[in-house]
Length: 521
Image 1 (tube, rainbow, N blue to C red):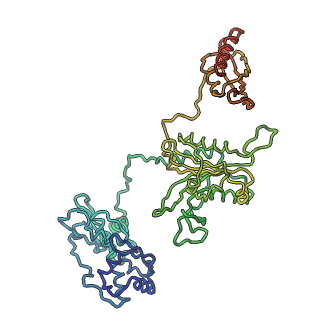
Image 2 (cartoon, rainbow, N blue to C red):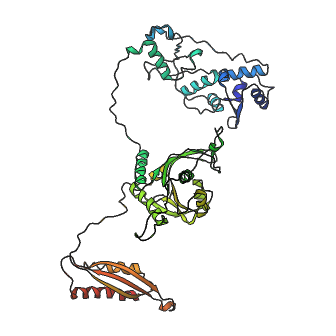
Image 3 (tube, rainbow, N blue to C red):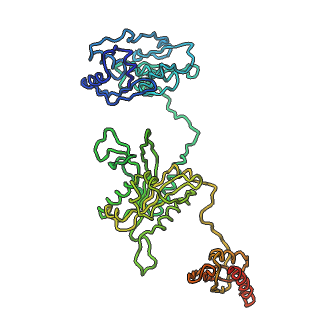
């Protein structure tokens, strides 16, 4: 329970009592003071005490004032008394014939305008750790803190057939919510008198956008062969951004996680120790980050990929582990499925700190990249290869890659209007044979192999089917003025309606020769 030091001094005379003396006496009396928070903006101090189940009498400020007056042999101010109000609405007016509901107290306040709460009321509530909302809510909170009495204030012009209920002392433990009052009325009135009819609800429910994206991610990662795991949000890895629990059950679960990567590595290590198969897995879960003044919560998706026998070039060759480009391609395939437009950036140590990675030594030096939103360059996630020095600690002897992505930032990068990454073009194939020419030439220092290829294709000669670059050699023995490069191209000719003759081939060769001659200068 939180209460205001300044408010307490208006209930009992504490001129000769210091704050430290009050804390000591309350603690010795069995009422532990858990926290003391200064609030200079209102010149007040907020005290947080722990109320045990056998001392519910000190769960309100009046109860605390009585306890303090008893401990220091003081008297309460005369203003500390609870006024008795008259019941303005009789039970007969409520059409309830039962002696069990004589404790209902309904009072009507007229000519009350919904102005803003006065400053003194705002300061009293702020001193107790409650932000001001509106006049009705503030009055309700004020009475609850001071007297421990739950009330309900409503406007009869907007709420018809509603009434306030005063819960007696002997029913406070089981009647706490509005639904509890409804249940009590139904019990007295008789449940057998209720009409057995379910109300119709025409509005159809729908999934939120984040749930739709999560479902798509699950389906895609499962289709890639990854297993989904669910792990605890509690751990014992400490860092500057870790959120500590005040009263953990065990030391191993004393902090909230701020990354999913270590949970995936622990799951893989556990499966290997149990002689299970190589585990490739992913998890979608919540992580927590602590900054200077706030604690943020977000949903991340993380994955661990890599197996000793991911692929092989042929049946006669040995199987090979997952390469960096294959791992990057798997992640790009996921982005393509979701229509997410990303850019790949070089990693920085400051960016890695967001994912509970102390520094880039966790990953291979040249095998870590940051994924960003193409529109605003905002960081979405991270992909990296676990360094070999860490593989031994996790019982891993092959390449392993991990990624972690902020799900909300990923949704922001989705562009529904974007086309697919792969553009499939369907065209008829020719039934006639092709002719292949391997051409070697020299090009100038201002040309490159790609530009030569583009110039040949731009001739728009329908008989040129494809151009392939076989090799490019640079001659470093010449001086800069005579610097040239040797280029070898493989060009394929084909017609769709006939077999090519010598005249066709000669015309194509002449066009290509003219392009290559211009490229020498």
